[in-house]
Length: 353
Ligand SMILES: Cc1ncc(COP(=O)(O)O)c(C=O)c1O
View 1 (tube, rainbow, N blue to C red):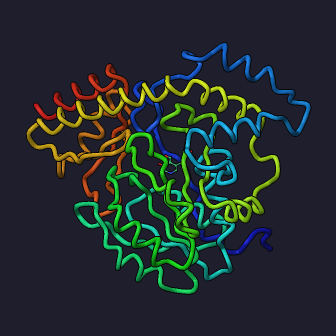
View 2: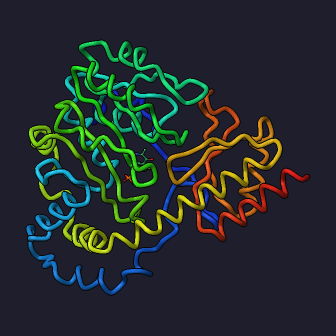
């Protein structure tokens, strides 16, 4: 006797396995706590929303503010509980049948696999090259099947941190019959976007997040940018009141005070350069340039030993060595100046042993 979809039997339950540490540099979160900056303004905004009602004008206001921030018309936007939920809805909307699959690069964001699996789709991966670049022709070849209903490109890519080549992304969009999803979760740290191309390309859909650049990972807010006709199709698979009014009010408040967050991001970008240069100057460390709020580095065979040492010193970073392209690599989130300094101290201590 079984009660659920039979393919779920083989699917593993996803656990986020990040140990609790004093210094949190493992999940690409922001170090800025929005309440410290905006406390009263948030509370006032929340008070203005009657929670005994399903609807409120705050939804329209949010759409207008987000349109203003993104530079696309409000009809080109849909929002929900984090980029993750947006991915889930897109996968739900493109799944045709049990043979449907998506294509993506590897290594890339882990949950493309989790959520395609959750909706009963497959996923195929093209491995990145050792310089984290990819072949658009190979990628198109992999997606060249009636069963491939979605191509996913993460730009900049997590966990490698690099931007993909513009011309290659364009080639993929122009030569795909089905939807091409660009995940721009780290857009504010790269400054690169395809949002201005949604009018030109009917098969382009972009996903973004407020978890990183707007410091509200725990609030859960993400959004989709695409042509109005795509937004309408995607909204058909969303539950009607999926985004609660408190989150909407919070996000309006963030957008009304966005300079605070954007200024913080500029500081993170500065710190990222400092941390990169400091790591690069330590003999034996290989570190990669990044367009995000994290970077990957390796010390070769002893990387796992270094990882354990950092963990023992109450700092969480992330092992990303499971894919051959990142063998012996770890990922560290750019933290506050103080956290970065402690982290560097520990790395230097280990390297000097
Ligand atoms: C590439 C990428 N996409 C999506 C997400 C999910 O973001 P959210 O917190 O908005 O669900 C993450 C989170 O780390 C990510 O790195």
